[in-house]
Each structure stands twice: as C-alpha cells, then as structure tokens.
Image 1 (cartoon, rainbow, N blue to C red):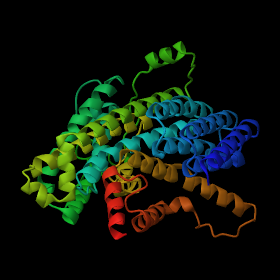
Image 2: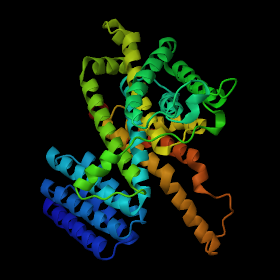
Image 3: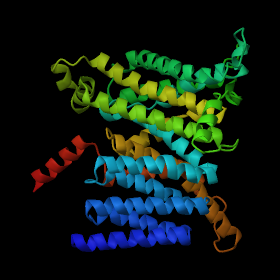
Image 4: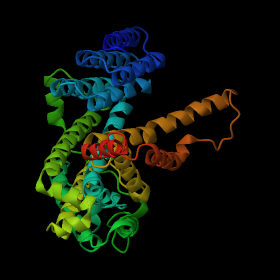
Length: 457
C-alpha cells in the first residue's frame, strides 16, 4: 500500500472512530477505535498522520468514557494509544511526551472520576509495573533468576502496616498507629530496609548460578511468607493469616486544596484513589529514570556483561559478588517502596498477597514485555494486570450471563477467572515459541536477532 493511501485510510478510520465515540459511545465504537490504533501502527502512514490519528483516537476514547464510563474496552483503547506511542518509531519525542501526559493526567482521571475502578486498575498496573522494573534490573539486566521477588514486596508492606496500625502496640510501648504522615518517611525506610535485606539474602544466594539460584530465591521468598503467616505467637508481630488492618493513610488535606485550586473538586469516593494514582505515576517516573541511568552506567554495562557471559565478565575483572549484590539490592528497594504504597492504598495486608504466584506473575511481566526492555516491562505489567484484574473476571461474568439466559449450556466449573495460572502459563509458552525476545525487545536483543537473520541469508 502506498504512503498516500495509508494516510487516507488511517485518517479516515480515526475520524470515523472519533465521530462514533463522541455521538454513539459504546463497545462497537470502542472496537473500531482499537482497529484505528492497529492501522496507525501497522500501515506506516506519514509521521504527522500517525501523531494526528493517535491524538484523535485518544480524544475519542476520552469523550466516550465521560459518557459511558462502564465500558472497559474504551479504557483499553486509551491503553492501546499509550502502547502505540511507546512502540511506533518516527514520532518526535515531544509529541509522544505531550500525548502520553495528556492521556495519563487528563483522559484516565476523567474515566476514573466516573468509574473509580479505572483509577484502581491504573494504581494496580502502576504498582506492578514499578516492581517489574525492579525485577528487570535483577533478571533482565544482570541475568539473575529470582523466584522470590514478592518477599521484598511483603517486607515493604509489613514495614508500614505494623507501625501504621495498632499492631505495633502488641510488642512496643508508645502511641500506635503512627500518624499517617509518617507514610512518606516509611517509604524511604522501606527502601533502605529491603535493600539491606536484599544484600543479606544475596550474600549466600548469589554464589550460585542458574537453576540453583532460582531454587534458593524461591525458598527464601517462601520463608518470608511463612514468617508473616506464623509470627503471631508467642509475640504477635504480624497477626498471622488474619493480616493487619486498618493501615493508616497519609493526610491529603494539602492535596484537596491543591486540586481545588485548579478547579478539581474531589469527594470521599475519589480523593485517595486519585492521590495514589498520581503518587504511583511519580514513583514510576523515578524508577524509569533510575533504570535508564543505571543501564547506561558502568554498573549497567557490568550487569549486561555478567548476563551475557559470567566467566568472560569475571576474566575482564568485573567483581562478581559486589555487582550482583547491587542489582539485587536495587531491585529489592523498588519492590519495598511499592509495598508501602500497596499497604496504605489497600489499608490491609495479609500473607496471601505475597505468595509464589505473585513472584511468578511479576517474572511473567518481565518475560512477556522483554527482558531488559523498560517500555516492554511496563507493557507486560499492564497486560498481565489487566488480564488478572479485569479481563478474565469480565469474561466469566459474560459467560455466566449467557448461561443464565439459556444461550450456553456450560458447566458451572467453566470460570475463566479461576484459571489465571493456566492462562499465564499458556501466554508464557506461546511467547517462548513465537517471540522469545518479548513484545518490545531490548535494543541489544533486537540487534542480535537481526544480525542472526542476516547471517542465515
């Protein structure tokens, strides 16, 4: 297809989608909008047409969500626009940044104020994206397979949950829970605590390689979960399997005043959700900057050297243990910070949130997106979180409705939401067979693959 024809088709579909999303918002218009995003990505129109098409589609999805906030496909249309901005080459960075900020700070909040589930979904995606970026340092950059990563998430969450609730009064004298404003201090404290824990765990574990390291980290992760489950006697530290609640939240009076100053009136239904949504965005921005700077530093190059060939890296004089420990501590610190946010946002923590499945899910996000790739890992986190939180459950409800209406005669055991592990496993197997480099591969991996293809010709 010629460039001129592609321009005409892409702009036509984007314009038609905008009109339908505005005038007759619904699932069908949302589906056409998604088709518009796909055509923008794959037909390769001119750069200005691509940018304009994505802007029109983002506007259309936003208008539709302001009218029919319960249609999930419209929200995923916004996510698709963000993914297209990350993956489509040729669009100037300032346009990508402007559109991305507009979607994250205008479109998603508009959807979230009408349906708080979208703010909750955005928070969950953000929390898991930040943790996946942390694990990306360990697995994607340094090549150290860690199957107990949720342990650091648990340490961060329990660090604030114990002192931000009356739980600490069981073993300490003083006034508990602490004031909610200690939340910010405990975020810094959790970063330090989990980084030190990562070093202590890594000291014996990182002398191992490959499968042995994976088995040891798996065991250590389970140790933390079992401790959280059983440290309720003889002294009650964690309240055992019942978990800890209520966990204090920070005072956000200043946030109310700030939002009122710019014309946004928050109510009890949306204030904390919007606050945590913005907080998670800020933390992800910091985590991405730290990832980029570390990746370009001598430590990042040392991690990649270890990942590619540990023996050669050692022969070149790279200190093995110290370099590996730095990767382990960095990844653990990211996870600890998100644990504090998780505890405050949910106001409840229990050992069930930090099982082996949580570690495997975060690892799956890294593998799905592309090991070592920052945009890939964020995309993987968004995809698996959306599947786990919304898509499988919505599909189960849809099947139940059809079953109750007599359209389908399915046994009651057919509940897609119960098979999340099976779905994740199938996704990972398919990725290993058809796209082992991930959805958005790291640039180095991409170049290696292209060189291999050239060599085969």
